[in-house]
Length: 82
Image (cartoon, rainbow, N blue to C red):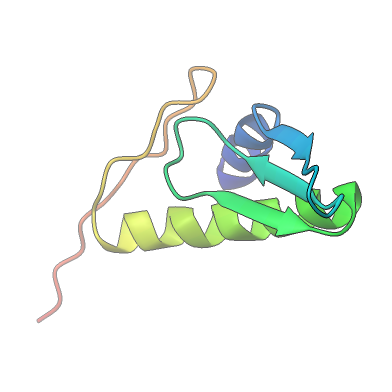
């Protein structure tokens, strides 16, 4: 389920070439703070997927909202530690 969610989110990614240095900027709308800048488009995609995964794990660890992507929603479970 996680891989499907990541793939669906990555399909929504937007990329552009920055005019000042020719590098690539990528972001995923609705995923605040998920953006990268890299020298090649391939590196931009790879780094964006890594940032997205880390962002998801952080949000899950804090029991924070995750956007619904193409009708996919990750279920969050709160585990209590004793």
